[in-house]
Image (tube, rainbow, N blue to C red; front, side, top):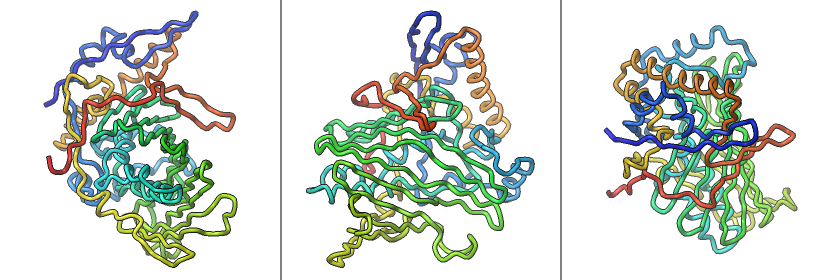
Length: 420
């Protein structure tokens, strides 16, 4: 069992309104101090989602499909499920922040480090495309992560790469990510805003937000989005990624379109739901394809040079997302009380033990504390402020997050090398 200390914060005052960060929230209420200390006493880390999907196999009950269908019996079609509270029996033992982070710091073949090693802009661009595909992880039918509470953080290092996430908004739920490496070769700045909607026979989660990958040494910035998550309830249960992903580098004038879809299906039935197909082209002449992309994101994806006809393997899932290593705590004293693996530790422990009564109670406690702190802020006229990001929204309602620090410091949680 890992030990952690509460992380104290300072309150910032501005005129009659007080701006508070999550650390001051944790310690603001004397009634919550003992509870906060207790939950900061353990960090529970679980295996990342990979091709094996072992966690789901361990937790999956025999009547999962019927139980999932019963959940949505009273939900009307078109309903926004952003704040739909799942029973603990449907939760993976990890937060959504952890899942976002894992697609960056859990990668067997480290496709991210390749992005800054290309000899020209075209080679770097195709490396970015390969890495984007590597962030596609096998979704699991019938299970979902915890909804992060406001101010929750997740901080992990893999080698020289340091990744920091923070839940910067609760209504709507917005997560921010910042990652840098020690050599200044790559920087990631993301904001994530999922909007799941119930469509009667399916649930589709559209992930809004801006994803940027920056290669400072080449003055190149790549902007991209991610596919939608489609959960089919009827006629047969399935879960898959769908939709079109665009990757754009204005600095080099290159662009890619990737279509995630079900191949050879009839009315959404049959076929393979893990197909990805696309192209790379110059933004100035989108009709002229430079490379064709084709394959399956859980197997291999090929890259075909249209001019020469040469075909190469762009991405290999067995190298990237198979046999992933579980992170571990390296420095117990560095753990923040807002760290995801600490905030949800009791819930995760109970889920792993299949003690559903304890898991439900622990989950209610976490969510109840968050509601109490929100009520307390409202009564005191306090406005909560993220600790690590500035948050803004444009006229179209899109959220943008800007890191307050130039680089991410090394984390108390690390991903060990496979040989260690």
